[in-house]
Length: 64
Image: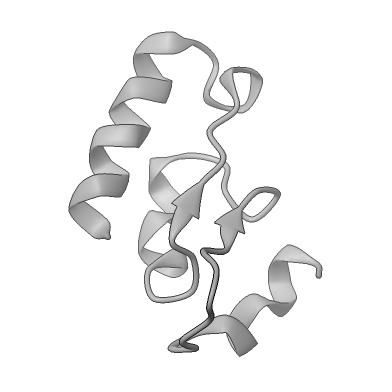
């Protein structure tokens, strides 16, 4: 599904975790993903490096 069409995932109780792939860009859009996804696919190219990728992982743990 397209990133802008993921509101249908909010609050669903699915048997497998759903990953935010194209919907995830950086820490700024984490609040919009909360309650929809259980996993973040963090891409080094999108986060522009390892340090920011690690910060995204830490922030994702707090959001989840």
